[in-house]
Length: 606
Image 1 (tube, helix red, strand yellow):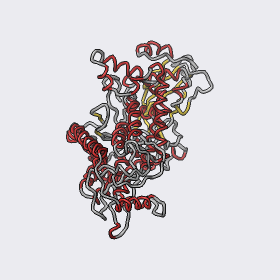
Image 2 (cartoon, one colour):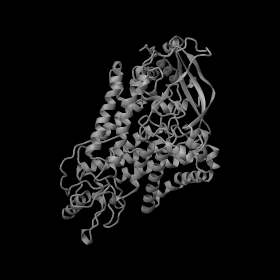
Image 3 (cartoon, helix red, strand yellow):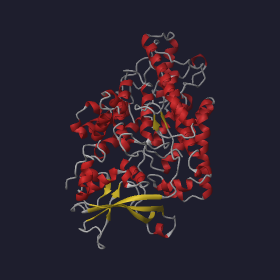
Image 4 (tube, helix red, strand yellow):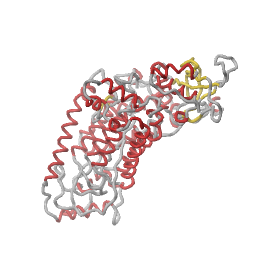
């Protein structure tokens, strides 16, 4: 399955961290190439994907001016157009679908960044940037900027919360504008790319998921599908470049093949076809459908694993085997991602993976999606084609030559940056969800190279008892937005939204608190009833009460209840068994030295 996530290690953090138009069907001499149809929509750089890696987004904008007439001097496509009647022009389809993903990504940033990386966040980005600057001290400021490129280097760090909100709000505004109007240009797309990159590069482990890099790579390619300045839903002077469309195909090929190879080289259960016996129960954030799928018979899980291998190891090569198989590849991968969306909460990973798959279709294949009546999109494109047929042959203008040169340069850049990615794919020591440059233009992907066979959870508890070790001390559980906790709470359904803290709690359960210092920071904030930190949780047992005197972490093993069994009959989705303590009871006084040694502000009682 292309869905998990692996967190990358940051050398400085010390922590361990994812409108297509239809060919106009005219007859005789009036039958034209579908090129004009492909003008209609540009795939926003927001093309997101699916669960191919977890690593651990974004949009376009513009108003909708009157559609200009198709001028004979439009810029020709760098690739030769197909002969009349042949449907080989790839379409730049589904702008609205692609653009809603950046809206989601910036919405997540707006709601969670202050609590995670703000002035009083769990891992403040100001401290991170200062550590980067110290690390490169004496070697020039440019090295620090190139290591962590972000516009935050140019802003006032004393107002970091305001800076983070400004970046998220600007990205949300631009992406929403593009989504609503259906218009985008290179300037807007590049703005979205820079804004999201600025957040990802200071997000530390909170932004270490594979889909963050995938969103940036998709967005970077999307910049070059748009006209430079024009804000039109049907631009006539900038047909989509074959180079860019093949860039998207190369992206989906690497995503799927990387996910397949990391599995077959990784956990033995992928080779003996038993991984799906565990996946639904042990994935980061299960949904209600995962509960039902986990109860499937053994032969269904074997079929799922075999299907996964076929879709990730065989189907990607269909891209290079002609139009029909390329379209089949796109359809199968989109269907696969839909299944993954249904079976788990993998943020916007699966949604994002669908976007480059669209580049496998052409206008003829997707024409049924658009109305064909008078005044409809296909009717307008047909009129554009007829106008073009009556006009002179396109003449190559200076601007067209520059644009073609830019596309060729893009192709060379992607090819050059793909060298380490290809070497990684061929290596028996393949790593997944890795970026080889700080701009994350071309990355390596992969997911679920290993599958956990049992689910463990860290449950945070607090008590008002003055003595944490007293037998009569009453410990009460904190509840998270989506991760398992309360045995009777139904698994959540949140995709494509993403609760970053819930995901990191899943990783923390594999390790110890010494590898996840932020969880001790969170415990300190709970001891003070910190409003910002508590906004990341769903349930605070000390709401409208004095804060707890002690907070501890308990380690539990969780399993789905058996469908039709006594636990399910009692309304329980989960059963659990205590493993032992995760971290001992802590008070604010215990944490004073710990906080000071890390330059964290001591929580103030609220």
